[in-house]
Length: 430
Ligand code: AMP
Ligand code: GLY
Image 1: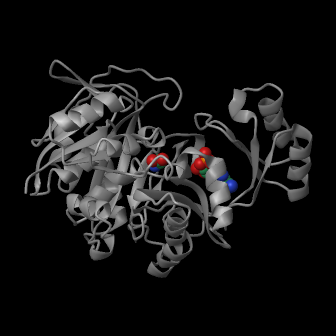
Image 2 (image 1 turned 120 degrees about the vertical axis):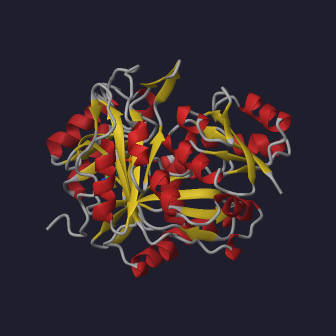
C-alpha cells in the first residue's frame, strides 16, 4: 500500500532521513516541515512551511493530507511532547513520549535513572553552593567535570584541570550567575578518559535493535580543539570497536535502558542515542539523546540496506524483534561544510556552488542543512551548511572520497575540519 509520510525538521539529518524514506517502494509522498532546499529537490517530497514547534498546525496538516506516519527529527519537539499531542488526536507518529524523552531533556532525570538501573556512567554529585562543591572537587582530584545542570547552550560544561579552574568556573556559575537559573544546581562529575562514540538503537518499548557504531567530531577545531559544535563530521562503522564490545554495550547500556523505562511506566519507542566514552574501565554513558544524531544519520542512511519505513512500522507495531538490520559492507564518512565563525557568529546568504559536481562523483551524496533558495541561487543560511558523504570499501577511502567531493564545493568563508577520522585507532592516550 502506498504510504504518505510527514518528516519534521530542516537539518542534514532530515534530508538524509527523507532521502532514505523516498527510496522505499511503499512510500508515495513525503511532506517535510519545514524542510530545506535539499528535501525540496527529492521527487516524492514537498516542503511545507510550518515550524517544528507549531504542533497545532503540524497535526492539522497530518489530518488534511491523510498522513499515515509522522517522523520527528529534532529533540526540542520531542521534549515538548509532540508525540503525546499527535497520539491524543489518534495520529500515528514515531518517537518517544514526553515522559520517555526526559532521558535527554533532563540531565538530572537521566543521571538518577542510570543510578537506579546500574547503567555505567560517570560518578557525580549535585551541589547548590560553591564551598561544598569546591571541597568535593578537591577531595576527588583533578581533572574533574563541572556542569551547570540546566540547559546552557552547550557552554555549561568545564573540564577543570586544577583547583583554580574549578573555582573560576564555580564562581561564574554561583556568583556571576552567567547561566542564570540553569546554574542553580551544579553537577560535579568524574572525568572520563577515552574516545567518545555514538551508539544508536531502535526501540519499540520492549525490544531494541542496536545499529552499527559511529563517531562524531564535536569540537570545531582540528585535533578536537576549540568549542563544541553540533558535530563537524562522522565515520561509521568504527574499525577499532569489536562485535563483542558492541554486544557488551547493548547488554549493559541499551537493553537495561529500554527495560528500565518500561518498568518505570515510560516505555521508549523511537531512536535512542547514548553518547559514550570508551574508558579503560569500560563504556560509560556521557548523555542520552532520544533522536537520531546529526550528522550520524547522514552516514547511517548511506550504509543501512533495510527499507527505513519497514523498520519504523515494526517499531510502531511492537515487533522490532522480527527485523534484522542489514548493512552494506561499506564504510561511510560525512564531512560538514560550515560557515566560518560557527559555532559563534557567522555570515549567511553566501552563494554555494559545486554541489552537482560533487554529487556526480561515485558513491558521493551531499546532504543540505543550513541552506536556502533565492530565485535559483542556493545560499548559506546556517552554521552547518552541507554534509558531504561518501562510501567505500574502507574508511580511509571513504574519507578520501568525501574530502575530494568537498573540494568541488565552494562558498565564501567555507570551513571544514581536515582531520575527520583522525582517531582511527583505539589508543588515544598513550
Ligand atoms: P554534555 O553537554 O554533558 O554532553 O557535555 C559536553 C561535552 O563535554 C561532551 O560531549 C564531552 O566531550 C565532554 N564531557 C562531558 N562530560 C564529561 C565527562 N564526565 N568526562 C569527560 N568529558 C566530558
Ligand atoms: N551528533 C551530535 C548530536 O546529534 O547531538
